[in-house]
Image (cartoon, rainbow, N blue to C red; front, side, top):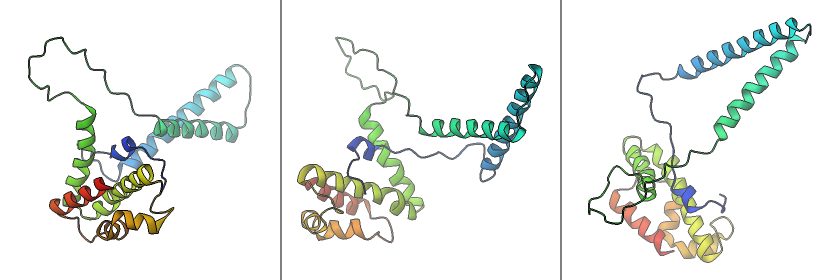
Length: 194
C-alpha cells in the first residue's frame, strides 16, 4: 500500500456504469473491430497520399506506425485527468433560504463516492472485499501516516496497537460478507478515533 494517497483520492470513486443499450461482453470486440477498421482506413489514406507525391514506404512500417499512434492515443485518453467541475454562479448578496439540491458540491460527490459502492456491495458481497475494504485500508493507512507517522506496512506492531484488535482484524482479514450498517458505523467511528 502506498502512503502517498490523499484524502480526496481515497474518497473519489469512479466505476463504469452499465450501458443502457444492453451491450455486454461483445462490446470490446466491436470496439476492437472499429479500431482496426479506422487503422486500415488511415493506412490506405496515407499510402494513397504518399504515392501521389511519389514516395514509397514499407507497408509493415506504415502499419506499425499507425497502430502505434492509435495505441498512444488510447493510452493518453485513458490517462487524461477528469474534467473540472462546472464553476458555480456567484452567490447573491441576499439568499432566499432554499437549498439548491441539484447543485454538485464536493461533500455530495464524496458521499456518493461511498454510497454507491456500499449500495452495490449489498447485491454482490464480493464487491465489498474488492472495492470498499481496500479503500478503508488506504484510509486507515493515511490517517496513521498523517497522525502517527506510520502505516500498517511500515510499522505493523505500532499500527496494530493504534488501531486496536477489532479494527486490525477487520482490515487484515476480509470478511465473508459485508458488515451490517451498524457494524460499519462502529468501524468508521474507530477509524475516526485514530
